[in-house]
Image (cartoon, rainbow, N blue to C red; front, side, top):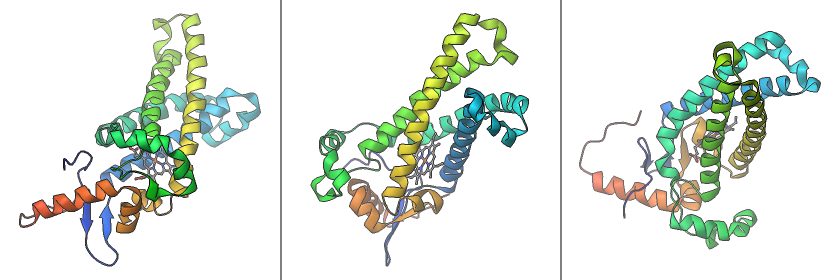
Length: 233
Ligand code: HEM
C-alpha cells in the first residue's frame, strides 16, 4: 500500500481509546491565523461593500482605518493560506474513491458511511472546499491588488479597476459560502473540531471517516517499529 496522504506529524497511538495525531501545533496555528484573517476580511469587506453594513467599520476604528487595514489583512490571509496550501495540497489530490463518494453523496447525508469506500485523509467534499478556497483566494488577491490604489493606482486603468472590484466582490461572496460549508461540516461530523483544536482524533473517528488513512498510519507504524521515532512537532 503506498502512503499517499500521510503528512508529517500524523501518527497513531495504541491505548483506550486509540488516539490519532492529525495536525501538528504548527499546522493548527497556521490554520487559525488563516481562519481569523478570513473572518476579519469578511467583516471589513462587507462594511465597505454596502452602506447598510457601514456601521461595522466601528470595529476597525472607523471608515478610513477599515479601508487601510482590509488589504493588509488580505496579504496576511494570502501568505498564511499559501503555507497551509503547501502543507495540505498532496493529501487533497483527487483519487478514484472520491468519484464513488460523490456518486453516493446521498449516503453521506443520511449517515450510511458503511456504504462508502474507504477514504484517505480527506473526503471529496473536503477536497472541493480546499481547491475552492485555493482558487478563490488567488482571485481575491489578484483583483485586490488591482484595486489597491494607495500603492498600485498607476498600473491599471479605471475600467480595469471597476471590473476587478466586481470580480473581487463575487469571489468574496463565493468564499464566504465555502467557509460556511466548511464550518458546518466541521461541526456536523462529531469529533472533527478536536482535530483542529487539540490536534488529534480518536481511533474510532479515523476508522469511521478516514479508514484508508488510518490503515496507512498503522502500516507505517509497523514498518517503523524498531527504528527510533522523533516526537512530532
Ligand atoms: C473560522 C472557522 C473555522 C473552523 C471552525 C474551521 C475548522 C476546521 C477543522 C475542524 C478542520 C479539520 C478537518 C479535518 O481534519 O477533517 C479544518 C481543516 C481545514 N481548514 Fe478550517 N476552519 C475554519 C476556517 C477556515 C478558513 C477560513 C480556511 C481557509 C481560508 C480554512 C482552511 C482549512 C483547511 C485548508 C483545512 C484542511 C482540510 C483540507 O485540506 O481539506 N479553515 N478546519
